[in-house]
Length: 214
Image (cartoon, rainbow, N blue to C red; front, side):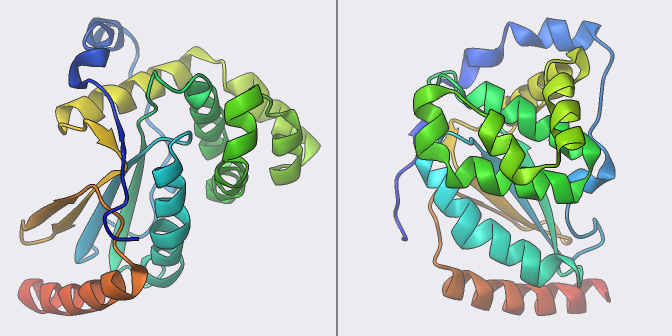
């Protein structure tokens, strides 16, 4: 779906939050938050919003295939960043739940992320997540995620994600960057068909590995 649209919003919407984050204890996500390894020839840095229809398409048509095909062999290092828009009523709640699942592990995050995106049309209307959580997690995991989602450290991580997105000049979702080890950088806001992206990644990963002696 080359040329698909995006969800846009104002760049300065998170300016008042910087002081809050600066004064709070910085909380980082566990390393399981990322897929692949930083030594990979190519880094894919993604900024996405669970309530954004185009982000859902990006997740299923690009992100999942790349994670499945390129991260285990460490050809691509995937960094997924949450950047929910205030225009979507339940986007931040969905993000808090997903962030909480990340603290349980990569498997829990991926299962819940799948459910959140696949049921986007439902929860963006009614804001109900309990049944969705049960479909992705066991009862103990669900209780942990619901409790952790409203922990101050999750709010701190969310605000850090928003401010980091602002620092990268994110004005719409989805936005993603292809960054090579030798410093070449490309920014995209459109969804590239996977067969085209695959050809690009295979070629660039081989060339980049040769350049850095990987």
